[in-house]
Amino acid sequence: MNFGNKSFYILMILLGIIYFTFLPGCRKHYKNVNVVLIVIDTLRHDHLPFYGYKKNTAPFLSKIAAKSVVFEKAFAASSWTAPSTASIFTSLYPFQHGVIMGFLPRPKKKEVKINRIPEKIETIPEVLKENGYYTYGVANNINICEQEGFTQGFDIFKKFDYYRGNKKEVNDQLKKWAPKIKINGKYFLYIHYNDPHRPYHRRKPWYQKGKKIKSNIISRYDSEISYVDNMIKEMFVLFEWHKNTVLIITSDHGEEFWDHGQRDHGRTLYSEVIQIPFFIYFPERDRQPKRIRSNVSNIDILPTLRGYLHLDGSQNDEGLNLMPIIFSSKSEKNPRYIFSHLHIKLTSKEILKKSVIHKNWKCIFNHRDLEELYNLTIDPAEKNNLYNKDLKIFNLLKYKLIEFESKCTKFKQETVELSLDKEKLRELKTLGYVR
Image (cartoon, rainbow, N blue to C red; front, side):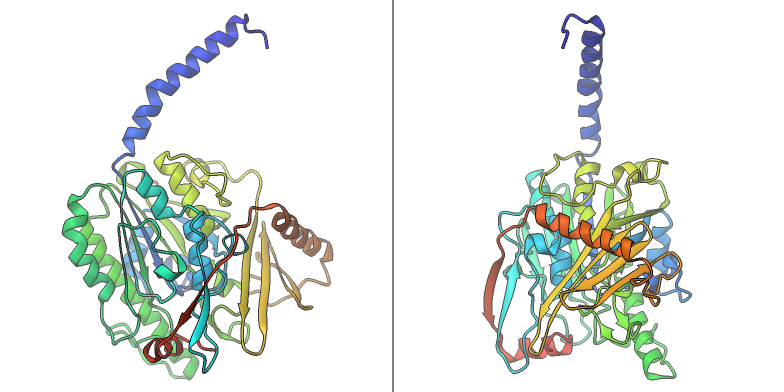
């Protein structure tokens, strides 16, 4: 390089002026922003009015979504809580962080083997704690626990058992913490509501009995959504999240109501269980309501927070910083390949499914012989398998996942074996986790 070139010197001086003049101010601009991450368990995106549901299940969420950046095509890294939430926390796919076994005991067995997030992996609360945040977490899902590594990086974390009546433990705990949270300085708050998870309480005044078994089950499920909507509204007002707070609301997975012949979740990778709600409500100075149609993943949450808060990036982050498409009129230049992964070992069989989404195409395959391909634009319900008609596209998508798996970083899987008492087994059975 010719260092005698005057143009080069002038360019370097200008870049230096820009860096030292504007960057510190930019960092200062974000230094006191609070971060709140709410995960609503088992929430289907298409049961929310701002995703097209005809029933107004979530009036409050609709109100703040109208002021937020809403991602219309967001996908979970798995179709059940443990692996998907671990992916939110780590920006890694399940086959990378290794959390594929959670509280899913076999019938009549008191022991269960679960995976935990490896300590080597940096999680959202750890990243924010290192950058001066007080970190708080509260959950009432059995899988969001210390044994699975979800408490790493939290100053205070509280977990409740889910069903002991219709108590409001999560909000009651937050009310107790509120005075301390408000005066301690900038904070990260993670809230995991287990509603609307099975067994679907009949939440009054929202529940209206359906005429048939299926419609009644869905009515109970929808009433749970309205219940959580009301819980979030209460906390939004209490903590004044309309001020100086970036609020992220999403789900770990959806729920199947016989869409493909089954119920619950953690059995398939169809859209009803992996397409999730995801929106970001920014502080007022950055609030630009927008709907984004690019395919995104829940592994993008951590790198997007890094981008918004001007924190250092990490080579381990597999997700993308979504800030360039959030605050730009430009669309995504190179549509990506997004993966989902499901691996469950049951008494009688083993479930191993993988999916790849690229543009409007989605393929699903497993370790046996079932292979599926769908055009999500013309067939969003995934009823018309095009595998035999577009084999070239299927093979390309499958190859992209195989290529990624062969090259990506994988952490050593950590396993913990636990004994379960009768009360814990009863809770797991109620939640549908004993198979």
